[in-house]
Amino acid sequence: MRFRVLFAFGPALFSSFLAASARAEEPLPPATTAAAPAMADLPPPSARVNLIITGATTTLVSYGLALGASYLWTADDLNGSKDLRIPVAGPWLALGKTGCSNNDPGCSKPLLVIGALLQVLDGVVQAGGLGIVGEGLFLNTSSSRSAPRKAEGPRVQALPLNFEKGGVGLGVVGTF
Image (cartoon, rainbow, N blue to C red; front, side, top):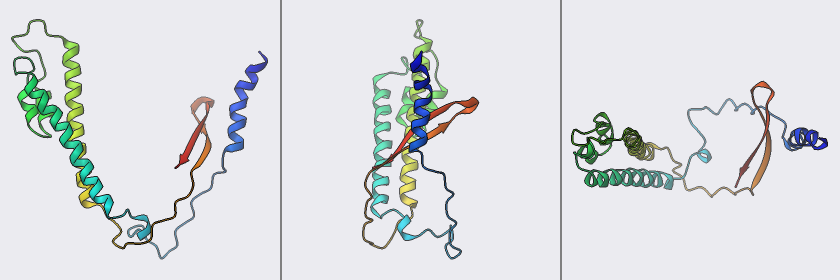
């Protein structure tokens, strides 16, 4: 009974000592515009190549899994299995044909739902990989080879969290 008060107010009191005071961001000087970011704020040119490689790998791995699944199951086993051989649009075309085949009297509805969810996931991952490739193609990078920024040491900070109806929590944020 005595420890309930400690458990109730202890984390809130602890977080109030660690929380930094909130401050508004300083306004930008009038000479700087939001349309032209400073060169130090732009990523290095190598970020463009990394994004293109990451996006292409994501799309190819996801398409490879769908392609393998299309050869594992025939059209009698899985409606629309041949549509999975089409990159990016294939999972969405196969999703439209989801249903029990005529040759399978013991068709399981939960398995159909799981298969449809996997088709949606595969379609989203393939399209997302192409989106990452597009981001890499159109990314603004710093063209000058400036000296690398000096990295700050790791920093961890506890922050109080406010929830509706009087709820309180503690969050930890850090940079490494």
